[in-house]
Each structure stands twice: as C-alpha cells, then as structure tokens.
Length: 43
Image (cartoon, rainbow, N blue to C red):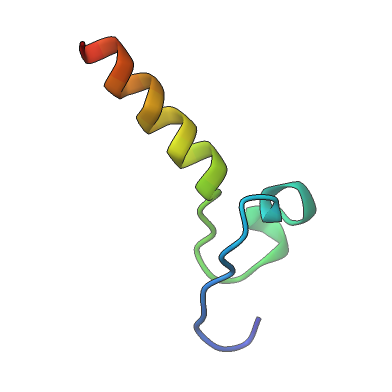
C-alpha cells in the first residue's frame, strides 16, 4: 500500500502482519475480540 486506505476485512490479519506494511496496521478481529472480553468482564 503506497497510499492511505482502509483494508476492511477481519481475515486480513491472517494474510499480512505489521512488518509487511509501512502504514499502521490494526487487526480489527483482535480489537473487536478484546473489546468484547473487556465489556463482558466489566459486567
């Protein structure tokens, strides 16, 4: 990726890692999972 953009796919973390991309990479599946666990544990 040479320009800014969003790779909006929950499986993208299975294909690429941060060291494969020069832009910040956020694994949305991991973020959603962590937020769900945090939410449940706060109850």
